[in-house]
Length: 195
Image (cartoon, helix red, strand yellow):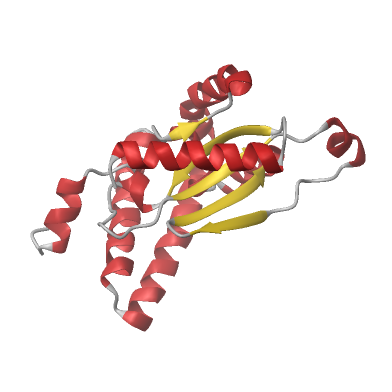
């Protein structure tokens, strides 16, 4: 996938989300292998749409139900902003935090300023949630390891090496975004057995 194809997909999903949740879309952000630099030609474009609760949702204590839309080229998950923030702060959710760190996102014009301010706070958030993030990453590594034991697939091996490398780099003090995102040269070396 080219950067333009990813950005076009994000724009299309933003428009779909705005129709489904008028006035509540904070942003649509890329997550997954395209973000990490471990994608291949057939990789999906997976996104999360982060939604702001309505006044009625807040007053009634209702959370926007988690739903997912499947597209031919990937999925789009809808997430309530309150749940996203809770998962980042209490569980160190790597997949939620990466949405605020990716360079691939689309935000409606009326929420662009809010989105950018949140993105600028994520290095501080990742600093304070450091232990939770490492705990989450270790859980991801264990899951990928179990997948390797069951299927021995190249995809699982690459994902395991990616999260293992993230844990090492993040533990050594690299910032969350820098530790999380690889370039394709690294993956090419891994898949060719050079590392």
